[in-house]
Amino acid sequence: MSQTEFNDPLWRQGISGAQMLFVAFGALVLMPLITGMDPNVALFTAGIGTLLFQLVTKRQVPVFLASSFAFIAPILAAKGEFGLPAVMGGVIAAGLVYILLSLLVKLRGPNFIDRLLPPVVIAPVIISIGLALSPVAVNMAMGKAGDGSVELVPYGTAMMISMPALITTLLVAVLGRGIFRLVPILAGIAVGCAIAAVLGVIDTSAVSQASWLAVPNFIAPELHWGAILYMVPVALAPAIEHIGGVVAIGNVTGKNFVKKPGLHRTLLGDGLATSAAGLFGGPPNTTYAEVTGAVMLTKSYNPKIMTWAAVFAIALAFIGKFGVALQSIPVPVMGGILCLLFGSIAVVGLNTLIRHQVDLSEARNLIIVSVTLVFGIGGMVIGGKEFALSGISLCAISALLLNLVLPGGAGWKKKDGQEA
Image (cartoon, rainbow, N blue to C red):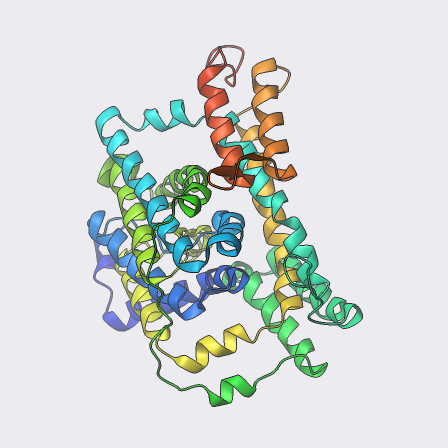
């Protein structure tokens, strides 16, 4: 990385920043649209979160923070039971988990995370997140609400929209070249919306009535222990994802960000970004792999570029028509794309098991993975009305406890005793 690159003219930094936001944009707004949040708030909190991350890490790491898909299931569950303000309280608490982990890493070193959350624990949790969400994607692709309770678009029409959107996303992801390969979600949305417009499914009346400039629909958080219990355990999976993201961007730029600025700083930055999002009514934040891919492709290693991306995100958040237009995207368009995205989350978990060569013939590993998957996907509930754990939250805690309680803590490692 050359110093001359850090002295690029402002106009070039601005263009690169806009490009990074463009790459992150599809996934960034899709998450709040699924969970019923305001996409303009998500843009605002992504920008604020990225700036906080840069402040904590002394602007050394070129990453962009935005909406985390890992929290979709608990957000939907907690929102239906406790309301969105209570969910925001849970998001703040999830950010505090990152902050606690950062303190522990500071005191005990980065290897502490590996011992507390080895691959055999985190992989089945990630798989459960993806597979537990699969009915939501399928229902939306068929024109129903995410829970399947009501038909929003006739089945035949919905399939004519969702399948081309999915196929476009697949083709761009596989066959795209250059920067276009990094924006398959945007390509899928564009094609899906174009077909929906031809079929008369898109309603643009709200867009024409909306103001050009408007304050995002910020939501104040509320403290509710039930919602917090939904959200906090799920933070374990994105914490590991965050570490992987930091290592990945380090490999791309040729720097060891785990040592400098330090994993404790990056975790702290992510935690503050997530808690800040909860304060304003936005989704939890995480580092975006798409942006890391764009950094690798364009060789734009200057962290100042992410400052520009954050500023552009905050500015877009105050364009009222923009947010209303995003909310008018038909359900089948999102459903088609989510068939790939939710499956991809599960595959990340599978890849974690494979890459670390977790031996599932070992009884200990088999027990942890099996119980975690059944609890997470099957919808197990433990507790009563006042205090209950279920779904992803339950499976995350179960995996963690099983790993701590069962003997043979190094069982996931290779037979020769060396870490995979």
